[in-house]
Image (tube, rainbow, N blue to C red; front, side, top):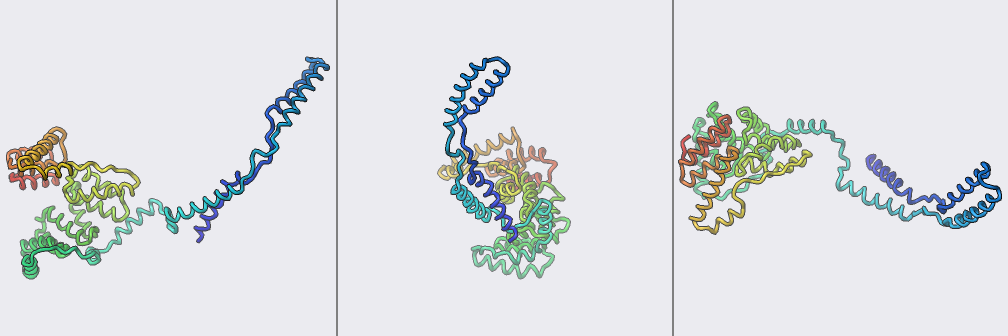
Amino acid sequence: MFFWIICILLTAVVGVMVAAPLWRSTGAPAAHPDVAFYRSQLDELDRDVARGVIAASDAKTARVEIARRLLAADSDVTAEPTDRPYPVTAAIVVAVIAAVGLPAYTYFGAPGYGDLPLKARIAASDEMREARPSQAAMAAAAPPPVPVEVPDDYRASVVQLRLIVPTRPDDLNGWALLATHEGQLRNFNAAAAAQEKVVALKAADATPDDVRRLLDLLVAAADGLVSPEAETLVRVLLDQDPADVTARYYLGALYNQTDRPDIALRMWRPIVDDGDVTQFHVASARSQIEDAAYRAGTTYTLPAARGPSAEDIANAVDLSEAERDGMIRNMVAGLSDRLATTGGPAAEWARLIRAYGVLGDPLAATEVWLEASEVFAGSQTAMATLQDAATAAGVTP
């Protein structure tokens, strides 16, 4: 209530300051501009007589003439004041300020919201992160996934797998299969539990891909939220490779969810600028980064996605197989030329390797793989991306 009293008083003060000039009148009539001139002439005439510059008789005649002109000018003084009061207008101005200002604040402002300096916001964000629920609590609160339509025999096989695998706690392949099929059925919580067993059984032999899969399943089970357990995996991946795309996306998501869009922007920008737009984590970061930049108080223009346009894809539908193959080869050639002249991120080199594999040109895929390996030899993440592409293309790294 005290806040609204201050708002009303401030509105009243502003209204009075704006309306005061319209409310009062000076009441002073406007004088003819020649009056002051003729009066100064009379004074000057008296000084000339005193100095003996002009004869008294001549001065008398001149004084009569100047006085006559002075009276004529003085009679033209405006009878009405030039600065008249406008009480109705003043009242309207005050009413408009009150009628627009207060409702506008209730709509655009934050009534009852306390001061929130930067230091307090950072402290609140830290507290929010520390107070996050556990993975189990997040998964329990998440809405149920949309059911997947699968054949009955497939679903029955998964049910059998659920019964058999727990009886073989050291069966790595069994847990891996269970994690895969639970994920296919969108039972993300169960899939995450099975994948956790896979990582635990592999121990030191667990690969970054194993950890990334577990991380994806944990976040999916929590309906997109990054739990403390998921954050631990993020830190593990970043310790191994600070440029890890999956880890950078989820760490940015965590900060974005806890009111630190500035850090989210910092985490997402490198993977959005250089990442493969067809990769899930890059696409997810692209969909959120402009909003994060806006909330962080800055601007960020999303770079154009590289690849065939929607028009290219639409046109390809109506082409014959030979024409479509020719169009694909032209696109691949264009990508190859651009990478050869200006370079590009590892994801684009990997795309080129896969493209040559699809086109049945293993020699070209091998050449690109060897060249890219020299360029990205210092990055584990880039090399992993390239190796996956080479394997998919039938090239033995």
